[in-house]
Image 1: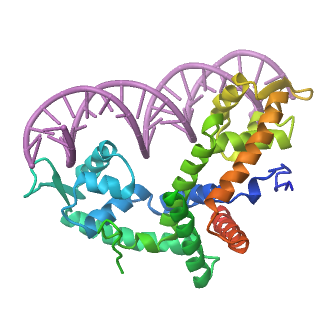
Image 2: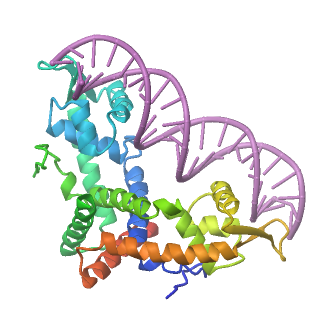
Length: 152
Length: 152
DNA sequence: TATTGTTATACTCTATAACTATA
DNA sequence: TATAGTTATAGAGTATAACAATA
């Protein structure tokens, strides 16, 4: 009930826990993502935000924060960074003068297209050893894991 | 090629990316872990450290840091916290006067046994909707994902 | 020379609370 | 009253660089 790794260390029950493997995979995927995106200096969170703004032009910061699961106060600096880099614009909302309508700039649109290609390359990298069927199985199982917890 | 979620938001290519699902699962699992461990105030990282010390008494801080993938300077505060709480002891190493031999205190041993039971309950929680076979499949796929990246 | 534990320091990501301007 | 964006602040969790003691 306790396995020794390559370093001769006993990892106990850890290797039998799904939570342990999810955490390790997340760290490794994150590191690989950063390697792939190094020249663009884009984090997974920033890519997600650009994708959501690109697909939902006019989105407000609060709606965006809710969609990605962070506080709206946290979103401020995130948008600041993307705006300073000229990728995102805060437009005046025509409906509500309190909120901003977020849109990608022309440069942001172009950049997002480049990033998508890189992300797909990153995915091919991390999934190199899995068949197409196994990738779908993995996504399906992870989705059910997440949904199970979001219900509870 | 772009799916709208329950909030009417277009998530673009995100739901097709394994990286996206790994990240979401990790966040959800972490939150559930903290809920289960709330009364013990133990993080996943601390549980891992206690497990490794418990299974490898006499381990040095540097070896432990390497095993869990953090810097040895970061390990200092981690052990400090567990030592203040009376769970871990820094013994003098008989072989090398520079290093500490880490061991669980009697209280640490007892605590770890309690924590293991809670962690197994946590695992049952998050895996409630998966069959035994699916759990093994998930662990297997995540392991291969991580190993693929650690090789690269 | 190299390694162990340590400190000082900083950076990232996150949250909460309070403010302002609107609604 | 309530909401959108913002600011100030704080807390994890992490890293790097330099140091003393020891190897």
